[in-house]
Image (cartoon, rainbow, N blue to C red):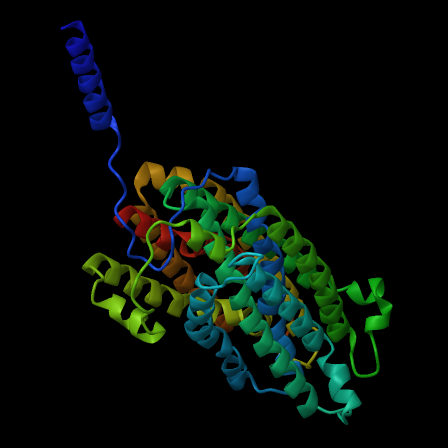
Length: 438
């Protein structure tokens, strides 16, 4: 009897232990294997996000100096925006393709880091081409004159490569941060905050570099027969950018330790047994599963960036033309306006960085949707203020007869500065709203 009782107790304990075990995971039907990993530290996330600083340093130079510079090469103002079409087009086609390819990359160095490195190398090559466009044009036959066709060809080629490279680098960096934070919404917000913070730091340093007019004295070899003072300053700034992007890329890719996709696949228990769906069909097929809230986010995001892109492309040009009343290659007023615009964008980036640091607390207190909505209203008010400032500046009557009043310059710089708040939210809050909707 004692033996039977012991066996019964053992049977009951075994049954109870089996009942307390967690349920076995269901086989995954996703093409991306899911393997539990330990959480990475915030220091690693910080280092991985640091490449955004190098990318944005070059973007700041591109956004503040290249629209004025391309007009100095002889491209009419009305055509300057056409050159910038490569950016949205590459974002529309290149980023999804790069994202799709990196998801399936089987390199032993990981899925994201090879794309980050290749993109960074392409950025360095492109900015060297842009900075030396005037010298390249001179070597192929350009001479003194308002129009420099060969320099324009070199500039446009480098410019479009730069846009493609920025998208090749930036997308996988964000994806790498998402891989490291997995499905933790809070850590995702922290990683996006780090990314936006480094974008702000890169902006500050880039705009500060672009607003300084004495780089040709620091690097005297940049001033040549084909390259005047403004060109030499731009060339010097891009040389600094090459060093900066190299340092931040090394910091980023050396911090993350990715497990190759082949290793993940061999360790995963559940794999999709069917063939991979066609990429375009896969993207278009997901649209029908979007709930109405996601369509609202996409629509508002599209409308928001319709407003942001003209500002981003023509901010310093607007300052040089509308506030200082200058024209490219016609006196110092336009160059002074461009420098003042770069200063305003530097202050814009300071506010962008502060807002990025406070983003987590703001969203936790008021909700990501509310923060996003208020930021869009603030953006619209600032753009209306720019229209009003241009109207007042035109009717005062100083344009063409002297420097602008300090009050007009202060108003323009103040608008640039305040716009850093909604810009920071636009960079990250759509992701945060999506996380909350999940």
